[in-house]
Length: 371
Ligand code: ZN
Image 1 (cartoon, protein in one colour):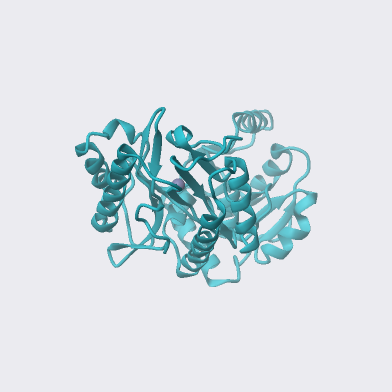
Image 2: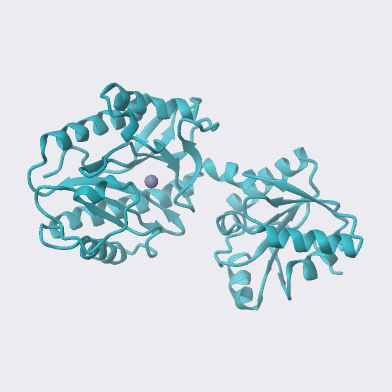
């Protein structure tokens, strides 16, 4: 077996990320961590392929992937030792682990399938390998939740791109076109502005469809006197943005105008009130109490927001049952909504970064009632 001592990624950020991870592994008494969650792989190694494994120990940084990704791995992760996987996980992993003398191997409990875990456990027993599999959750996700300046730069670009596409989309979305047509126009605009695809399916939901928080665009024709909820995002260098507005192309009726103003007030209360060090559940309550006091508490059935980075949904989670706490460097959405079944819904979503203890809004798009 060759010497597997590897320095880690060349770039400073990569080295820092590995150092933090290694501290965390030492604290947990793990010899190494096995990772396969794609965004975690990209974060630690730069590898953006959709299939592969990382093995990180105090001294080793190994990227294991199959034939299809070997060239990409060498290009994207020059400071990792690249090995080509053959057949199934136990076939290449167990020999490697024995050679390196690891006995406690952490794995991502929320990402490794039951089947993979089962096969690996069986092989460990059959081959009598002295190896304990230790389930872990959120180790790298915690690191990812605090953004570095370079990451803030990419996310800011993705936010600007979504803002720019939305500005142009407002001129295209007119009564008479369908939700699907509107979604396609927005997708074209995002691509024209050089977004790397779209990080999630664009939502265009009009009329009573807007009361479904995660509606899919349909063949329904958009009419002038109904709300149009748009939820869209862009991606730059792997980093996402997430953004929603509710438009009124004609006149909004009284109830919808009322809920719009409540949602806006709730969002403003959160933006102004959020502070570093605060529990994420407390942040959620800042907006929720505004909605509750207005009598619409039951109609705000999702959390206030979520972290955004390499994944559209990542830590922190801003919701009433969240155990996360907020810290400088976190980037997340603030997106209260009120949804009235059969009538329509309103959501306003912006992204913020926590800096010097306060939230700074990254989006520039206007938030007032849009006609
Ligand atoms: Zn969102």
